[in-house]
Length: 311
Length: 311
Image (cartoon, rainbow over all chains, first blue to last red; front, side, top):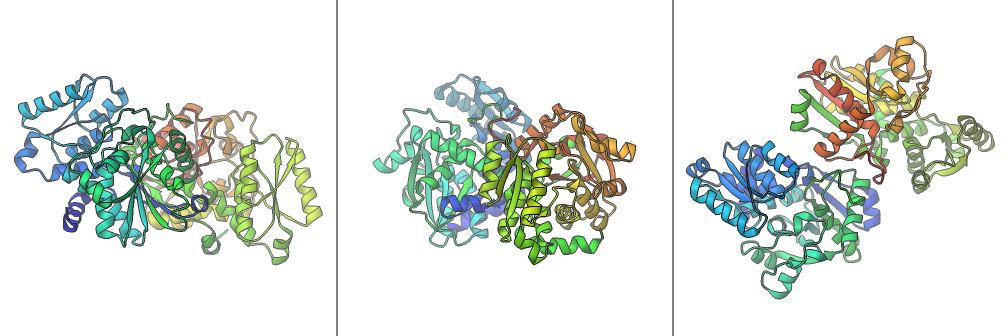
């Protein structure tokens, strides 16, 4: 994927996304010993960066494909993102979700106009159900992270950040399925001035860290993390980009995630997901290496259940 | 207080404050049936609008007064605001606080360089202690809300909001000691285009509502509200301004406050105080009157104890 594709993608999706604000805090900078710039995708439409990739993927379809709709399986932010993007573009979105998913997530999808299709809570059942919808309705399957158009879309958050702050030394994102960090690394490479990309990942789901070590896509054996957006694994589209363009993946503990999350809420006064806090936790862990550097942090989303906070 | 005083005040304090962002949400607008513009003073330095008035009050002192320091009694945001403003301006700030105040508030004052002076938990003890500091150190007493320079400073948030959104029909603030709403009403009058000021006040501490009814400053008999910043009463400097320039004070229940607070956290993805939510609660209560209007809302602050949330 080249620079022009990122530029075209950004122009394409601009009418459907917010150019989200970038926040800073003197106090956080003092404590971090670096200049941190928080790109607030929690303020994005539907509350997460996923809107960018979803919108781009749908806009790349032919008119015939658009008429038949799109389908994905997700119980997270991509489900809402695909629903809202599809609604904005007048396209049907089938969202396959395990019937065990929280009611609030099912309602959110329906609220954004998505067609909820419930199934058993196994990966096999979800894939079978998606396949059925593809066959029956001619819908196009869109993967939440392992899709070139999705990766390009997610990269536009970093592009906007670098347009505002061209001299960043680093940009840091959480690592889940790999779409955000791959897109970010591409934008950092093409639009930054020697800007390096770092990923933050919970020890509990350190598949990306181990994949970079082993040179092949690893899976998770444990998924016992509060960062529920990061339990997914890398794919064959984003892994080569991550291998080539990501500088390092920093692993953090659950306590470090919760403490970084509290820090963001208390000091930046914003509501972010545990997954977003993983990036700040990684920055604080690498404090010595990042001293006096300019560091961008992608706050990936803000969809949390206020009745179940870790503090 | 005239227009030029507000303009001068704003120019004076600009180096010490943030021009805070204004957030909007399509979803909130749909539900409210109006266009709402949230002026986010929770993103202000030290986390509340109080920074504006405190900075202005200190900057108006003579050099000799500055040398002898300032004093106030407050266990809320004004304590932190006076401490940080004083520190920024190289002035000593004595903060009289009841020894029963939460440790986190005492630490915050000390963190901003304030000199903490503890006393018994009665208004009499606090006033006696302030008087002692005035006499012993020659410090200048600065009232958190009933002070012309403080009122002017607080009015600059609305001035900034109107510079960005000149055609607001209404601006809505919470009502506590009266400094914010008085300053806001002045700015709305001088800088708005027929922009009216509305106050939101908890039923539990409806002294301002009753004061406007009776024509004299009333006190509260109950203070059983979650909006802990609004328990104070009006004063002789701000009450006449409120009488002249405020259109209406709308009272809201505790449930309405908590529900509006949750709404702001979930939809705007920002952390605000219960006191701030009172303004949105008032807007939702007056939904029929405000239909299709452009309404500014001052989110007054974001200093909350995350360990004690009402949801």
